[in-house]
Image (cartoon, rainbow, N blue to C red; front, side, top):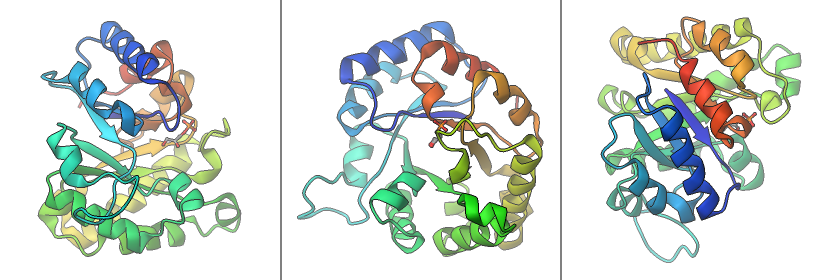
Length: 249
Ligand SMILES: O=C(CO)COP(=O)(O)O
């Protein structure tokens, strides 16, 4: 799977042009392709991908409550009614700038699953943690807090995105070995808790400076099931090249 996270980029008309160009370049992707678009574009982009077997849309956030007096927020029911299939939850930018922690993200994941949405759960360590060699402890803790209350059926609808914070937007990609090592660790954790069938089948994406020139190598690692792409998802040529770098399932 390849998911683009546009973050706070593109106007609605730019977004439509970008999706049209990607779909024209890769009309039949060999993998699931998801556009993570700003809230105002959810309906418009969903219209463009509607009915396509491999293209889908993700919201970049969602509120944990069912509905109510939460000005500016989007609910799971709204996303589902608009035809949206995925929701990115726990991105490091929301952890940093909106104060989200894994307890809150756990509530959001539960709400999303209750409505049939597929959460793309983001985890990953900061640079000082990596330098101290504590990345597995920190990511393990994030996953435990956010996902351990789920049952095997629920977890099977979750996509995990490992995004080391030091690699996001910095051009400093994790090495293939660093990505593989963490993905294997995450898969083992999921297998231990939910059984090896769930662990083997869960999709674990790598995110952090994925570009056309490093995607193929990263995606060739046995436990890397695709990517969550920021900057390089904003140009049709580079995103198309990344989609085509995914190894066949
Ligand atoms: O945060 C990311 C995707 O969610 C990664 O962003 P970049 O690909 O720009 O490093």
